[in-house]
Amino acid sequence: MKKYREILLKCPLFDGIDECDLYRMLSCLGARVMSFDKKYTVFSEGSPATNIGILLSGEVQVILVDYYGNRSILGSVSPGELFAEAFACAELRSLPVTVVASEPSEVMLIDCSHIMHTCENGCGFHQRLIFNLMKDIAQKNIALYQKSEICAKRTTKDKLLSYLSNEAKRQGSSTFDIPYDRQELADYLGVDRSGLSSEIGKLRDEGIIAATRSRFTIF
Image (tube, rainbow, N blue to C red):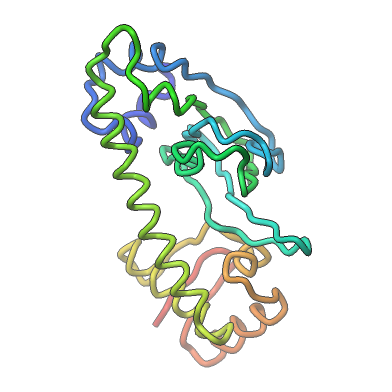
């Protein structure tokens, strides 16, 4: 576990936890690490919602597929971030989403019940973990609200500009990278890929944005 020291120390779940207690705590929680190749499924829709995931390396995407097979990306996860925590805390019988590795990834899995219920050892870190977990879920809810605002825009152009504006503000720069290729960005915004590519081309020609692969600049 010590090879993941830097990532774990910046993980919001362990905020306020002393490094000297971290590895003992992970052992108490029964944490385990798994590796996934690109495009491999980490969590499958319909599987029991019991585990919280912490991304240690790589990138994973949370994907929703509707009844007709339409694919929507709910978000991407970067190293140090949690995923599937809300579903595990809600004790859902089955996951409503699929989590897929978008590049080779390492994931730490922790059974949520080991966090939510105090162990027989009476470890003092449980209250802090519960607080951190609830804070992370609240922040994810805010991010989901912001995504719903973007996707509520009427046109592909408005959705794209709203998303790019939010990313520029979040990253504190007019030039920034996004975690999606064109198809993935279309899936995230809920629009047609060809229409999205057309709008990117128009905005580039009008001098409103510059775009090279996943790097954008807004003017």
